[in-house]
Length: 104
Figure 1 (cartoon, rainbow, N blue to C red):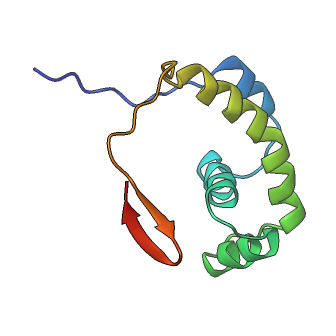
Figure 2 (tube, one colour):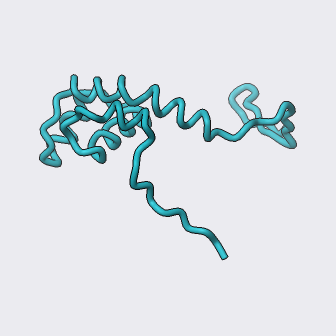
Protein backbone atom coordinates (compact mmCIF):
# COMPACT_ATOMS: atom_id res chain seq x y z
CA UNK A 1 0.00 0.00 0.00
CA UNK A 2 1.41 3.35 -1.06
CA UNK A 3 1.64 6.16 1.47
CA UNK A 4 0.20 9.48 0.45
CA UNK A 5 1.72 12.60 1.87
CA UNK A 6 -0.63 15.03 3.54
CA UNK A 7 -0.24 18.67 2.52
CA UNK A 8 1.81 20.67 4.94
CA UNK A 9 -0.24 23.07 7.03
CA UNK A 10 2.57 24.82 8.92
CA UNK A 11 5.69 26.48 7.62
CA UNK A 12 9.23 26.01 8.79
CA UNK A 13 10.25 28.62 11.38
CA UNK A 14 12.75 30.31 9.06
CA UNK A 15 10.23 30.70 6.25
CA UNK A 16 7.47 31.82 8.63
CA UNK A 17 9.72 34.57 9.98
CA UNK A 18 10.46 35.88 6.49
CA UNK A 19 6.77 35.84 5.51
CA UNK A 20 5.51 37.64 8.63
CA UNK A 21 5.01 41.10 7.16
CA UNK A 22 4.16 40.26 3.56
CA UNK A 23 0.78 41.52 2.40
CA UNK A 24 0.18 39.21 -0.55
CA UNK A 25 -1.04 35.61 -0.35
CA UNK A 26 1.70 33.02 -0.11
CA UNK A 27 0.55 31.34 -3.34
CA UNK A 28 1.12 34.54 -5.31
CA UNK A 29 4.57 35.07 -3.81
CA UNK A 30 5.69 31.49 -4.45
CA UNK A 31 4.32 31.55 -8.00
CA UNK A 32 6.20 34.76 -8.83
CA UNK A 33 9.46 33.52 -7.38
CA UNK A 34 9.10 30.17 -9.19
CA UNK A 35 8.38 31.81 -12.54
CA UNK A 36 11.28 34.23 -12.14
CA UNK A 37 13.76 31.49 -11.29
CA UNK A 38 12.51 28.70 -13.57
CA UNK A 39 11.91 30.70 -16.75
CA UNK A 40 13.85 33.54 -18.31
CA UNK A 41 11.29 36.22 -17.50
CA UNK A 42 12.12 39.76 -16.56
CA UNK A 43 10.56 41.41 -13.54
CA UNK A 44 8.52 43.68 -15.79
CA UNK A 45 7.19 40.63 -17.67
CA UNK A 46 6.11 39.13 -14.36
CA UNK A 47 4.41 42.38 -13.42
CA UNK A 48 2.45 42.31 -16.70
CA UNK A 49 1.52 38.64 -16.30
CA UNK A 50 0.16 39.26 -12.83
CA UNK A 51 -1.71 42.36 -14.02
CA UNK A 52 -3.50 40.14 -16.57
CA UNK A 53 -4.65 38.03 -13.61
CA UNK A 54 -5.88 41.12 -11.72
CA UNK A 55 -3.03 41.08 -9.21
CA UNK A 56 -1.44 44.49 -8.87
CA UNK A 57 2.20 43.91 -8.00
CA UNK A 58 5.11 46.17 -8.78
CA UNK A 59 8.25 44.64 -10.30
CA UNK A 60 10.37 45.93 -7.41
CA UNK A 61 8.12 44.02 -4.99
CA UNK A 62 8.68 40.82 -6.97
CA UNK A 63 12.42 41.49 -6.85
CA UNK A 64 12.31 41.86 -3.06
CA UNK A 65 10.41 38.55 -2.83
CA UNK A 66 13.09 36.83 -4.89
CA UNK A 67 15.86 38.28 -2.72
CA UNK A 68 14.09 37.16 0.48
CA UNK A 69 12.95 33.71 -0.64
CA UNK A 70 15.84 32.37 -2.73
CA UNK A 71 18.29 31.76 0.16
CA UNK A 72 15.56 29.83 1.98
CA UNK A 73 14.73 27.76 -1.09
CA UNK A 74 18.38 27.01 -1.79
CA UNK A 75 18.96 25.86 1.77
CA UNK A 76 15.83 23.67 1.75
CA UNK A 77 16.50 22.14 -1.66
CA UNK A 78 20.16 21.51 -0.84
CA UNK A 79 19.09 19.46 2.19
CA UNK A 80 16.67 17.43 0.04
CA UNK A 81 19.11 16.86 -2.82
CA UNK A 82 20.25 13.28 -3.33
CA UNK A 83 23.98 12.64 -3.13
CA UNK A 84 25.79 11.91 -6.36
CA UNK A 85 28.31 9.07 -6.59
CA UNK A 86 32.01 9.57 -7.27
CA UNK A 87 32.14 7.79 -10.64
CA UNK A 88 30.13 8.46 -13.77
CA UNK A 89 29.78 5.99 -16.61
CA UNK A 90 28.66 6.68 -20.14
CA UNK A 91 27.76 3.67 -22.25
CA UNK A 92 27.24 5.33 -25.59
CA UNK A 93 27.01 8.80 -26.93
CA UNK A 94 26.85 10.89 -30.07
CA UNK A 95 29.22 13.76 -30.80
CA UNK A 96 29.17 16.36 -33.52
CA UNK A 97 32.14 16.19 -35.92
CA UNK A 98 32.27 18.60 -38.88
CA UNK A 99 28.55 19.40 -38.58
CA UNK A 100 27.41 15.76 -38.58
CA UNK A 101 26.56 13.50 -35.64
CA UNK A 102 28.83 10.49 -35.12
CA UNK A 103 28.26 7.53 -32.82
CA UNK A 104 31.01 7.05 -30.28
